[in-house]
Length: 236
Image (cartoon, rainbow, N blue to C red; front, side, top):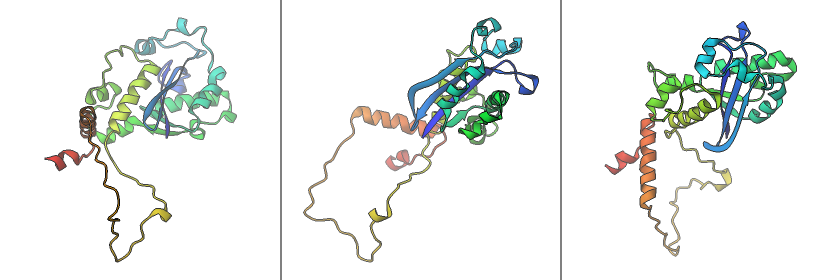
């Protein structure tokens, strides 16, 4: 599975008030592993950034003067996210702004749903931890993720932090699925299936000390994220 952890920064809070995107940051996960592949772009919004917004992300009008317009980067951005699942904290906000930018370019550009599926980690956090604060900062604290370097919001930094939060929230074991072809299945018979007595003895491979320590850390992560682990109960 290819997932894109995405965040945006904007000139203000509402597209209906004419606010626009000024920064997009994305990092790529493939099979739950960060690949190092990312997309990051500042964008000239064709309008003034509100003072209140600047206090949050620190991106000034002067800084954006020579940055490209959304229409200049739209195709490159869509090519990067196409076919992936977008993972976004408060997805309605970011997707709404991206769709607004696409609408301004013309209906032929489509909408986010034409290119990607979307997973909202805010909704996931509220379901997983009902009644608890679900901001990115609160989740970092809950899952012991260091965000001390985050003094201002920034799209790429926030997407990197969200990737860690998402992996921590979904670290619990939920199901084991074995995709076995029908032809490979042992047919159900009344007689027991016996092993060949002349088979070679099985080789016993014992875990190293570092492997045992890594396994213990992963079990702790499962339990911290709300997952259920039978390992400790089986070894008690």
